[in-house]
Image 1 (cartoon, rainbow over the protein chains, first blue to last red):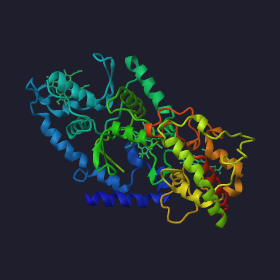
Image 2 (image 1 turned 60 degrees about the vertical axis):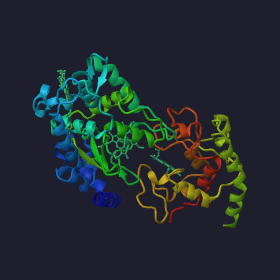
Image 3 (image 1 turned 90 degrees about the vertical axis):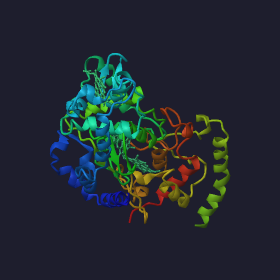
Image 4 (image 1 turned 180 degrees about the vertical axis):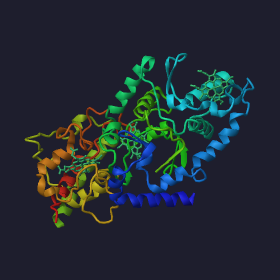
Length: 266
Length: 158
C-alpha cells in the first residue's frame, strides 16, 4: 500500500520537468504505438510502466489468479464451470480484440463483461456478477489477458454501424458545466499537461487497469464515469447502452494497438 | 491594498445575493445572469458595474473548485506546483490583452475560439448533461469574474 503511495508521489514530481514530455514525443514506442496511435503506456511515468511490466508488482495479476481458479469452478443451477464449455482458458485467445460485438438476441452491442455475465445467467444459471466486483473485473482481466499483445481489431460495419455512430457522437459532444468533449482533451491536447496529468489519447486497450489513484483495478466504464465527472457532467451507469456504444467507438479507435490488459496507470 | 479591501467589502452583499438566489432551491435561470454586450471581441463594461478585487481574483483563479486556471495555465504564483500547459502562460497577459478582452475570454471563450478547451465561466445556456449539483449555475459569479479580470490586469510580466 505504502509503496504505491510513494510511486504516485514520485510520478507527480517527474511530470513537473516538462522535458519528460518532449522526450516521450520523440521516442520509438515499439508495439505500444501503431502509426499515430499511442497506448496510455507511452504517456505513463517510467515507474508506472515498470510496475505494469513486472508480474509480481502489477496488482492485475493478483486479481487474475483468483479468476483462474474460478474458471474451472462449477457455479449456478446448471452445475457448469467456464472450463466445462470452453476448455482451457487459452481458448479465449483473440476474443478480446474483437469486442464489443453485436449480440443478436438483445439487438445491441455487448462488451466482454456483459458476455461473461451472459454466460453466467444463460449458460450456468448463476447470478450475474456485479459491475466493478473483483469477480467480474478478475474474469474480464483473465479473458482479455489471453489476447495480450494481439492488435485490437474491432469491426464497425453491418449491424454495429449505427451503434458506432452513437458512440462517435458521444465522443465529440461537449458536456457538463465545463463543456468539454472527450476529443477536446484526448485528441486536441494529448501529450500536454492537465495539471500534473499528461493527457493520453484515451485508449482503452489496457483495461481493466490498476490505477494508482484508485488503489484498485477498475473497469473502462469506471474511467468513462470519471472523465464525465471531472467536467461536471451527469455520468451514465457502467454497462449502460451509452457507455457500451462509447466503448465501441474508442475500441475501434484503438485498432492496431495491442491488448495490454492488465495495465497500470497513474 | 486599502482600495481592494474596500471593493471586497462592497462586493459582499452582491455575492450573498447571488448565492442566496442559487441556494434557494429554484434553479438559477439564464435571466439571473447579468446581461452583457460584446464590442469588437471584448466586453468593455464590468458585469457588476464596479472594478473587481485583484487579491480575491487571485484566490478565485487558484481555487480548484472555482477558476482552477492552473489546470491549464501557468500563473506567476509561488508554491503552486504542477501547472498545466493546455493554454499559454498568463504571466504577462495583462499587458497583451485589454480588460474587456480578458472579460470576454473568461465569460465565454467560445466566442473567441469555438473549438477551445477553455470553459466558459459565465454561461448556463446551451450546455449538455450538466451534473445536477451544477445545473443552471455558472462556474463563476459576476463578482468572481470581475475579481479575476482585475487580477489578470496586474499580470504585466517582468
